[in-house]
Image (cartoon, rainbow over all chains, first blue to last red):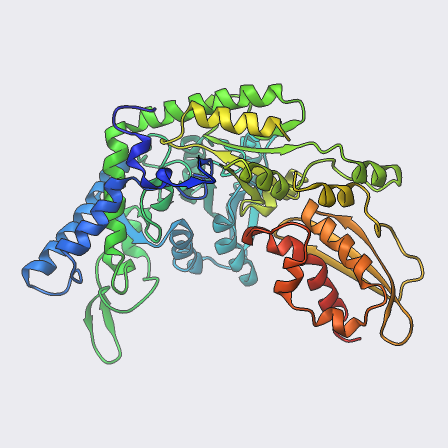
Length: 416
Length: 119
């Protein structure tokens, strides 16, 4: 196991048996399991401190507000930010939509936005909507091992490029992108630099840098509950931005035809916020800090290189992304060659087919062995098109996975 | 994988291939899984199916479901095929289907309903 501070027993779901067997959960890129410490924090909040925050003046409400704001401070400290730069949202998708509907709205016809071909849909669709207004969306390509083409990125940084928004770690290829370097290039170009950190903040040490304007990530991908996400923004940028949603809590004063909005981050948190989510996320952050993010990264790197090595021995398995575990996170997209008759027959009739098992069939095959992997396009269809694939299966690791999970995964795959 | 019946049909489908003298051609793609199936339909002129073939690629479940659908369709009325119950359709598949795979099995029926709407 990863360290004295993380045991599989901390995660109640792993007690669950399917046909008398334990599960091998390899889908933490989609969502992570929750330790008892996080679940307890949520129950304790409801049993001991539940009231609406930032409103009432009685003691219980003070307790709730304090818990909520302490959660914000803990999350801020975790990534090296100040607490008034942390906006709580529902998830990474909402964080990026918030940016699209605020700074995105200030773009003019002819302006450009630069993203990459390895983005999750949540960092594509919020920007694509602006194309209707004559704003261009440019994509940076990647090489055949899945490394981002930095020269391509630099050549696409134009005077009109107002926003550069890049994933820190691909949720399919696993590629860890050089965000410091990309951020510097973006800032030298005068562009706003946004990081989709949904797959990096949970898995490696993340420290804020001057060139990072906005950083988005989700609680549920880092042991926290669903429905709580984070948008980090430089305070002066948050100050200049208009609100996203409007309503309760986010105002200082409301008249019949005018309103004065609260200061950030409350300006962006209209309505009753997800207090249990924030409290749960803070408990998750505490849990991860106890393990240490260096240790989380080291552990995942170990499982990843172990898996890649074993997959290379399976001649019918093809995996995608960098070969070197140093350059990738603990997520492995793969396919398995299919030598069954139908496709051979089609090929003899000159129908071109890639002779791969469909990723859903791989996932169902593994499911029958209690090994849970994701299949499909992983919310990254432009990436799949770049790879000329309809989909892949995907195995991903987190703190609760061990070598025994790798063994179970690879030996099950070997039976296919 | 799955069972012999499913795998036998996957490897030796009965109705896979192109039909030249079709009356209806339905091109269905499932963007969520990259499956693509083309159904070719020929009728007896009175709304009854005299032959149905398919081409395309997809997962084992969608391919097998499509092949069974084509074979079972022969001699049936278009409207009765369209009107069959989704749940019963999935339950009649040779193996038990988990909720996450229902769309795979439903692919031919959905394609058929969409493509025969105006007929």
